[in-house]
Length: 606
Image (tube, rainbow, N blue to C red; front, side):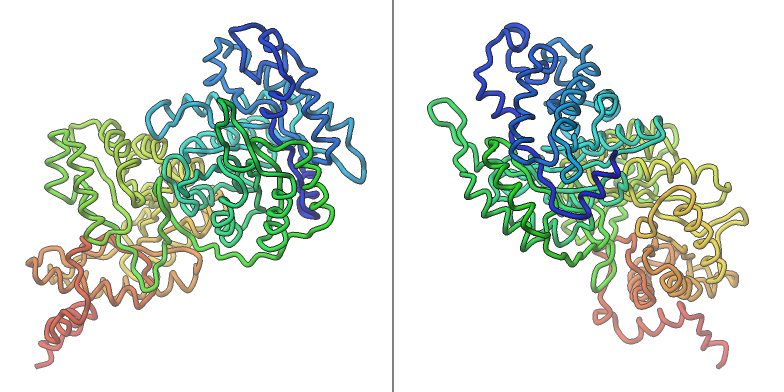
């Protein structure tokens, strides 16, 4: 049945129903309708205590012309139901809510207008990014809800009124797990809520929300609902329509809620909602429209008329690939390049960071991260590995703080799978995992790629195989091709979520084996970008100058980075404040650096 929903979506504008809560309140229900005083206000329990009240809501919206009705399950996770001491009824409530909606939808369905049931999944009352609940507990609660909804016969899932992107990731992980267990999947809508200040409740910009869900192929539709009326949604909705390759969903409130005499009032009229939705469909290209808080059957009747009349405007999508923090998104390719990845929050490479780690001065680590942002870093590489310490615990302490206190995205740097997973469970944005390789064959790589798929992360792939680190450009390309094939064809990652690091070696030793290493790396960048144009390339630049004095290192690093960018390098792990623009390096310094990089042995010809 889910293919029918997607088929219908491909053909025309679809209409969701209106406000369940508003409609139930209009019935003047008593405590007994809810099942007694202890359950008064628990709308979800009505599917057991007074199903006729829920049926009446569905009937009104179906008769108004809604194509899709939502189950009365917005708060039907065990997390919320536990507040009424009925967590044990979670599966039953979701199953029965879906069954009621299914019966009503089937009653009104026809060949000309099939009707669909969306399983409503709300945000709960806890924000995982603030530590109110752990990722595993939230995922498991959502999995129980999803199972009940599917058992009751829903056609799709609607993860709505999302306030914290870590909550969205937990919900998607739950749905994906249930789908995998059952061997079938349903379409999934993700709908975020943008508050009047222009971001989600946690401060997330719409571009960051888009970036975070971008890797999840489980998501069929993306959009917005609740918090405001359509007028306040328009700017963010326009951003979605310009940048999301998915169909777009919008369900505004009937205006911004107002408190009048102790009662919540919504003043947007059906005429006003209709005018806004005409613009959203006809000008922006929105595919699914509906009503959230305060919208009535009359509002939906107007939207049904629009859906019969209008065709979504064609959209030109600018889907630049990015990573994100809880707050904002950063494109993986900047113009001009490179994207600068701060290297000093790494216990292996930074003496200061290591000392802070050994003294458990985690808040000072946050200050160190913010210093790198001020110096120009676009991302931060995070590594807490230190012999004798609990790396999982240290990563948890760091990422918990960085998630809410650091504005730029993170690169999770570890060789340990449990450490990587712990970090990804705590991170609300789209992270990068550093790194995978084929040194031990496919076994460890398979585990890390599975985590990237589950948690929507990109991954750095080093050009290392069972024979060791690749030294020639051709060997680097060959290993990149092998990793790319496994990652995309076997483990389901996209090209755009793969970042190759073709490795560079020090030129400071004078070792004959590495005299051409820089030029081989630069050539490999060119070859990888030509062969896999949708993938990205990164380097740990400072390796090229290891062993030289600080001034020489700054010059060589800067010139090498420039040459690598000319070849197509997208990003670099660097100390951003130590990279100099070429015009600040004297002619002699640039010449010596280029001779070293290109293996120009002029002195041997004298």
